[in-house]
Image (cartoon, rainbow, N blue to C red; front, side):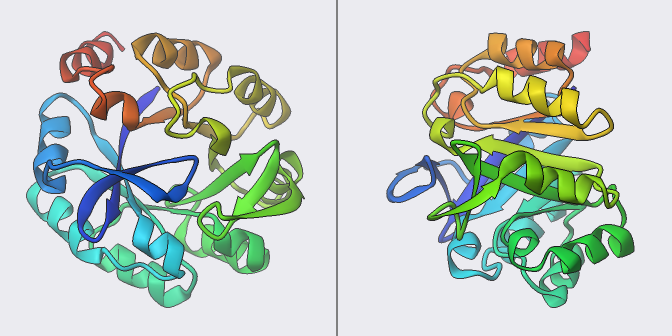
Length: 241
């Protein structure tokens, strides 16, 4: 299982949200590039970089942070936030992204999303399937829909999707534990899907349990920022794996 730390950016700085609530951001003083270097030094190979400004506005804004991290580390960056046009995709790859995670576009223009999976490759495009009470949420999680999480994943799974990042929004940033039963059900329903579990991770025990479930990767954030997960613990887990 991959361990993928998450760095969320608002106005060029690291911020964390609870349940996607932009009214209560938690800012961290550490420089994004310095933090990315720390992760790399302890064995991390992939970083999830979320442009929260871009997610809210509908187009990527913090390309310069992406470019800086790629330019100063050897990390592969999975970039997310506001990618809604072919131009957005091209620009993100030009600035150094290795992968793109996309949510809103897949809801509003599913056929275009499928075409990106085909044209850019299944290895490069990840579906962001973020749900509240098993219903997909959009517009940076600010707007609920009636779209069933499993129907949403299934539509793209049947059309060649390989990777899906699944977030239980009610748990994101709350450190109440991941929705283990939900991930079990997704893996059972879509056996060839590579699931990236995101939201709720409290500690290394949660990460180990997710590994035992068979998820492809665990994305974590707040547990690290709040000191519940240490860099040495991540390094030890990766070395053992």
